[in-house]
Image (cartoon, rainbow, N blue to C red; front, side):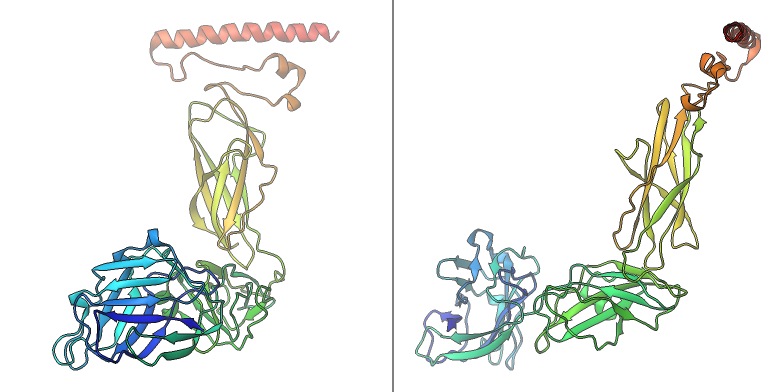
Length: 448
């Protein structure tokens, strides 16, 4: 039988601990005991005074990482027993011993009750909110019961507690998909270790990322069974939701007694279909595209270019973001949403700043609230002219005449002011016309 020892020092009168519970967090073997978690609750039969120590001898298999243990990782608080309760305060010293699996905590004065019954109230020892969660690993398997022997350091008769229940593991892969009727969605997840009763499902119009938000969300009353741990639970349909509404979901797994897991992976959001949806067995697929500029078009250099596009998704989810690549998918940048559309997505813009001269392959990819990322399509090619007034024609589309004369006009002054600049532009245009006529004559002569 594994021993969990609580000793109160210095020497105390006969008597010891009359009630105790051991409640480490964690749901699977080697899970670290988390911050703000109760380690032990016990009732001393003689008064505890300042500088007394409390010794935990943890069950076999428990791992204490001595280098990670610090005074600030723990709190001790004694409840009132007719007087005034103490305050949850860090011990003045802590001595970990990994080999012996012991923690020796020295009690601070502020932790102890005062007045009537001073030092005799129920004592709670916990991991503090400031602990890092890497100090102690519990040895229990999810949903298991362990029996502990409690032995004090005096001539007390050992006390025992039985069946300490450990919480199931949390769901980490919750997702949702469209259902085959209006106002319904399917939730899917892999059954976590320790699940033996069922699930608590909550939904809200906002993200559910903490226990407080989970508790405040609406409970979806269900009778779903636990499923088989480590296997998918299949498609579980939630019906009776508002059609075309968007909901955030979160699920806790339930184990023995009142044990429950932590909240599942957060920010799972689904758009409920306004009508029946056939998307029941495949993941939601977001889609994005460029509206302007169009493929095989040209834009001028020396100016920023606004790329405009749209996005959409199935009724199972909606577009969360769109990324744009102007180098064929090598690098990506976020587009700016402008207005929502009726296809579970939004229209967007992207400011292409001072693009380099030459052809560019523009691609887009959308990501939805389920984390599904679109596989980019072929994209569109847009050519950036070297400077204002130059027009590029793609090689595959150029006529022989276009191949011999790619520059139609390139005036020295885009916005000529004054006689000198205007005359310079006229002279340049005359020269270009002569060059073009010579090239055209060569082309015609060669064709005879």
